[in-house]
Amino acid sequence: MSNKIKVMIVDDSALVRQVVAQALSEDPGIEVIATASDPIFALEKMKTRWPDVLVIDIEMPRMDGLSFLRKIMAEHPTPTVVCSSLAEQGAQATLEALSAGAVTIITKPKVGLKSFLENSSNDIIQAVRTAARANLKAISRSSRAASAGMPPNRPKFSADVMLSAGPANGAAMARTTDQLVAIGTSTGGTQALEAVLTRLPSTSLGIIIVQHMPEKFTAMFAQRLNSICQVEVREARNGDRVIPGRALIAPGGRHMMLKRSGAQYIVEVQDGPLVNRHKPSVDVLFRSAAKFAGANALGIIMTGMGDDGARGLKEMHDAGARTIAQDEASCVVFGMPKEAIKLGAADQVLPLEQIPGAISAYSRASV
Image 1: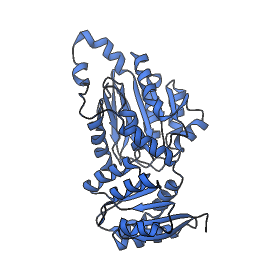
Image 2: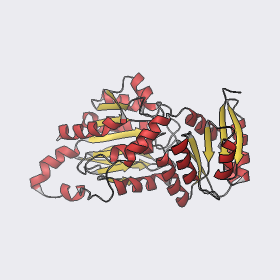
Image 3: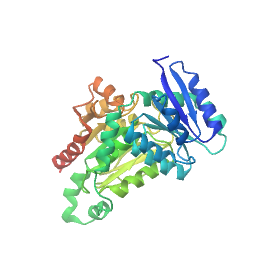
Image 4: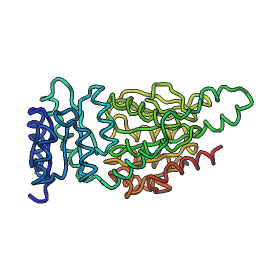
């Protein structure tokens, strides 16, 4: 029993507590040691037995889940899975929870909750197992790094205006836009991306990003980053140009691919089957970057569970792109970078804090 992952479920819905506990009980390596209807009850139970992983709701009585999470991460850091509503209000709060140190999220609908949770038992088990293996020191470091980023409301570089400024700037800007940065990440990636993007100047090369995240969350995540970064950050739309000073994040539930349109790079956003169990998939993005950008791209794979992006980064590497993998010590989950390194896909292995500098150096070298 001592080797089992000890889990506590904190949710004001008795149905959620029951169904999540039942789902987790299907895994012989997981033990639900307690449930609680709110954080106050949970804290009382945790005095006698502390869980290895917490599964918490956001909206709860007496103390909301976000306040509970911040208290736990400050006093006794514990891997936490947030079980959140797909509603926009829930999405915003969940993004704050990820920034505060939650490892990953499980989304739940407002209706059909019981059948949804029952059908998602494998996802729930996987989320708990991922959280149990998470590097809490890396979570803490990337939270501090993100909070120390650029202040909000800095003026943004108007890339569209600069690109249409006329013949005087034409050649230089054309050379700059021939270069781009492709980033792929998953578990722990919201904090890692915040730590990286807040440190980039408004003149940074165009960036295309796949972060494994459900629908509705990516738009809000992009909005949050846009409010604190010098570069423009937005959820990608089909046909968007990849230009200096702009970072495009693939929308949840859609694949994003790089394409070439004359002298310009654009993104294609479309539906399709899951690739490596994900949509959007990092491999889909990286393979398109290898095909259409080749040596004109910098590929970066960061923290995440599984191997999505590893083979795609190898294709970028083989096409002449420069490639970087985040190091184990700074990853929340050293899955995707580890697999890329094993394939020989990474030219460099860097800690998170050195990745913004590497992007800036690549940008300067490309001009």
